[in-house]
Image (cartoon, rainbow, N blue to C red; front, side):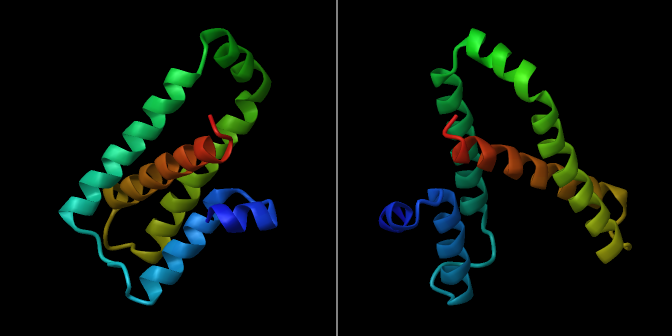
Length: 120
C-alpha cells in the first residue's frame, strides 16, 4: 500500500480498502467475521482514537471544531441515515434495532476512517 500511495498520491486508506476487498473476494482472508476478528477490530479502532487523542492539543481541537463542525456533523449524520435507511429497506423483517446498529456501526467506521485519512 505504501508503494502505491507514493506512485498514485492517494491516501493509503484507499489501498487498504482495495487490498481488503480483493483478498476477501479471492478467499485469501476470511470474509466472515469471527470473535477474534471482532475483538481485534475493536482494539484497533480504540488504538486509532487513542493515538489521535495523544497527538491533539486542546486549542487545536477547539479551533478545528469551530472551523469544521458542519463537515464533521455531515460526516456522521449522512453515513448513519444511509445505513439506517438501507437496512430498513433491504431487511424490513429485522426491525429498527437492527437498522440502528447498522447506522451506528457505519458511523463509527466513517469517523475512524476519516481520522486515518486526515492523519489526526
